[in-house]
Length: 160
Image (cartoon, rainbow, N blue to C red; front, side, top):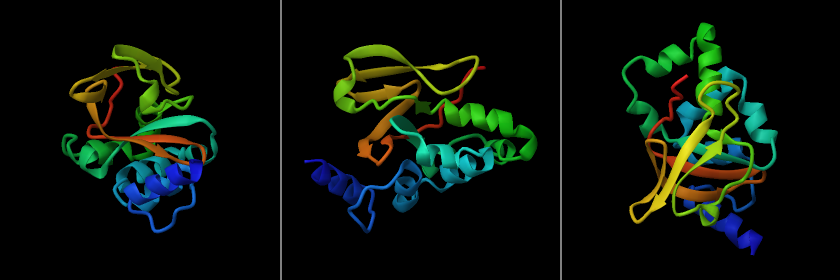
């Protein structure tokens, strides 16, 4: 059963192999998370995303990053803004696996890995699908060796 789920996840992402991979490898194989992966690398978080067990990543696609105001990504990638970049990226990660079949109806809040300030995401499951803060989940439950990826259409920006 697990192999079937992993095969399905790999096929959904357009990966060439059916074997499981970690979050970073899976995102890389998909080819639609180049900005997210570059940001994780610049923030020094790529290794943690690859090796930390039982995480959930709400992964903004390259299209989601393109919707940000001009210069936002470039600004965050500057070395002097590393703390801001870490805050944005860790706001997208839960310290546990959260599959779509575990979601409650209606809104609820979950804690992220962000270390201070705004640390919770509002998740809502309804007839129109699942939203996380102001982002819509466009593809859910992509299984990896170390967690779950849910693809979102908007970059989540913490208020603090």
